[in-house]
Image (cartoon, rainbow, N blue to C red; front, side, top):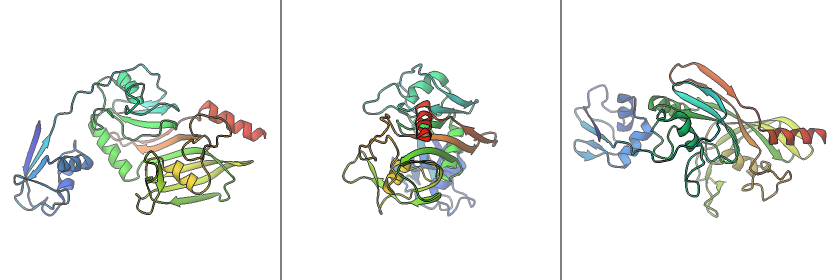
Length: 304
């Protein structure tokens, strides 16, 4: 158990406790502090605190951090398409069909198993037992760029950058239908579907979700889009494009079962990431080519 303790001084007086603790300890993110508070692991003058509590002068704060459990997930030598790597981060081009982290029905054969083999002990532990180093994720049947953190400091900084919309993510999507607008913004909140809990849906009571798109190329009955997202809701691009009448080709969940090219998984690719390196502050612009199957579909459409 890692126990940390401090007395509130004039500098921290009146500040929310979750904000004050995350600023005092660089290795603890604000989200982690909030989780610790929910678990009852943060005490103010001997009593369990709330995240909204504002500190008073001379408050005695104790933060109890449990030692992370040893990760028992096995390492697997699964090939990785590495786009960038240094001592702090790893950026890979995830192939379509690869699950990001273990879960029900997917105990192994995931990206986490692969990066554990590649990185050994050099991974951030903030994601927990089944998500070491995972800063963000993309769906199993979406291909493209993902950032992996090799240490906790890099993970915290990248997580904050994501939260503050400082990591620009650009996707390429092939959709059914002729998109009339050359570019547009979809601003529709998203939540878990009430009729099918495995799906997401646009809902007035959902979380804010903003998607920007512009047309790259038009074909007979199909449109190639460049998509940027401000928020990272589950299935966001797929839900938004389907909602406005342009489902992604191959999307078995949000495309009413229609799959004109017989592809497995949606034609959606995380093509480009733009962000500042969490340690060096260098601006990185990283790209990943479209998968061969995606390129072939586009070539076939051009011929028609």
